[in-house]
Every structure is written in C-alpha cells, then in structure tokens.
Image: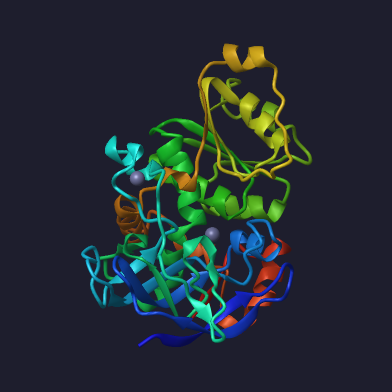
Amino acid sequence: MAHKVQAAVVRSKNAPVTIETIIVPNPGPGEVVVDVSTCGVCHTDYSYIEGGVGDNYPYLLGHESTAVVSEIGEGVTNVKVGDKVILNWRAVCGECRACKKGQLQYCFDTHNAQQKMTLEDGTELEAALGIGSFAEKTLVAAGQCTKIDAKLEDQQDAAVGLLGCGIVAGIGATINTGELQRGETMAVIGCGGVGMAAIQGAQLAGATTIIAVDIDDAKLEQAKTLGATHTINSKNQDPVETIREYTDGFGADLVVEAVGHPETYKQAFYARDLAGRVVLVGVPHPDMKLELPFQDVFSRGGSLKSAWYGDTLPSRDFPMLVEQYLLGRLDLDAFVTERISLNNINEAFDKMNAGKVLRSVVEM
Ligand SMILES: [Zn+2]
Ligand SMILES: [Zn+2]
C-alpha cells in the first residue's frame, strides 16, 4: 500500500512552500521507505525554491535527516525495518572507475530511488538532493541510508541528522580533503554552517591555531565557542596579513574557503603558507570567474583542492562522527538553533536568509 503523508513542496519558482499531501510508493528493488524524525532547513533547499538548481517543479524539499526504516524493497541488505539511519544525497554504485579504485567517496555514478513520489493528482515530485525529507515518510535508495548503532536519545536526532549535508561538507573539507594534521594551523573564511563545521573538524583533527574569518561579529563570537583560537573581522582587518600574523608570519597550513567567491578564494590562496593547501567548499555562482597570477600558482607550490560533500563516505564517516558527538568532542547541538514544526517552514527560510540561525530543524 502506498502511503499518503504531509510534506513541504514548492510548486514554482519563488512560490511560498506549501504543506501538501503526497503519495510515497512501496519501495521497489534496492529502495527503502523511512519515517523521518527530523530535517534541517538548509540553503540548498532555498536554492531549489529560487530556481538555482533547475526548473523541474514541483520539488519536494528537505534533505538533512535522521529517520527510521519502515519498509525495505527486494534485495536490500544494508538496513532492516526499525534501523535508525542518517540519510545522504547519493548511494554509491560500487562499479564505476572511482569505486573500482576503492575511492567510493568520489563515486561518479551515484543514484537515488528509481520511483518518484507524487502529488495526489499524480504529478511527479523531484526530491531535493534525491531525499525530500520535509515529509513524514520518504522514499530513497537503500545506499542513501547509513545505520547508526549508537544509542541516541530522541532529543539528539535533530543534531545528528545535520551530519547528512552541511556539517560533513565542512568537517570533511578540513579532515578528508584538507588532510589537516595534529599541530597544524588552519583558517576558515566564511562562518556559516559549513565554515563552523570546518572549525569543529580542525579541533577534532588536533589543529593548534584555528582562525575564523567573517564579516559578522556575532558569527565570530560563536566560532570561538566552537573551537576558533583567533577571529578576524575582514571588514576591519586585512585577512591575509592578519592570518600571517597569527601564524608566525608564514600563513596557515590549510585555508578552507567556505564562501564560494573569487575575492575570498584569492584571500585563501595568499593566506596559506608556502606548500600549504587551499580547500574550496563554498559553492560559486555559474557566472563567476577567477583570475590569479599564474606564476604565483606555480611558485607558491602546495595544493588547491575542491571538496564536494567534504569527500565524505557516509558509511565510513557518519558512524565515526556520531561517536565523536556522543563522546563530547563534536558539538553538533550548537548547530541546532531552533526546533520547529513543518508548518513554520517559510519563517525558517526567512530567518536563514537573514543570517539569524545556523539551523532550524523540523521535528516530524
Ligand atoms: Zn561508483
Ligand atoms: Zn543541506
């Protein structure tokens, strides 16, 4: 029996999000239906609203979730009914050239559920990031579910579900892509949710100097509580000079650019030590161009990398990060600014766009 559930849908570009009845089909081969417990409100959901991702309206929004598996399709072996899981964007294929090299985190042929969820009139819904979890139930590929064995209190679902997107993008940019080592120095430019998570990643990796750069003093204050040892308001201070000052005149071993703008990328490029690393995790607009003196790219050495989803492999990284959270080493609770119901979702987008929250989390 297909299910009728309530869900948050955007029907056209820049339309308000509406709560609608949707149909979630029975899981087909390799698919599962989950009961969503929590879902974070993310900038990517807003990109779907404003047409930044495409125009396949209507979209079923939501993708940062903890859930419980309620039905499994044929051939599903990685989870069973009743398992608590964190959802991720993409199930790895296991067969492409990246997977065959053992680099499943780069899988070039990821997939989501084959079947579509629909509105009551049969209109097919496009699920945000292949998840669509601002809904009481959603349909995903089994590989989009990572089972969490650790004992979590229901209260902790909201924080843990955020690992599914922005938080692992930031932590992964530092640890996986940036390969930050104990005792190294790092700076992060841009202290939204992803930048704050990059700071937490630096603390987890054992960095000694962690420099937060932003133009908002309130965010910089919060960055300190999450592990930043130094802060720079780049409206008042030159970030490149000041990062050098805080690193004995050399620049940081790793600079994470969490804005996605050519100007801040150049700051990151010059704020790193010789042979240092830059990791771009901020998402640029399609019309942006980067210009750098080519000789500087050569002579400064080191590496310029981009982190897509923080080069995260959910099956490897999610359970480890949940353990770190339960051990008190990773402060996921700090990212949950407020808990709301599905009906308050439009207000939550307004607060997010005003920079007033790290995350509003919908509790189903
Ligand atoms: Zn693959
Ligand atoms: Zn997200």
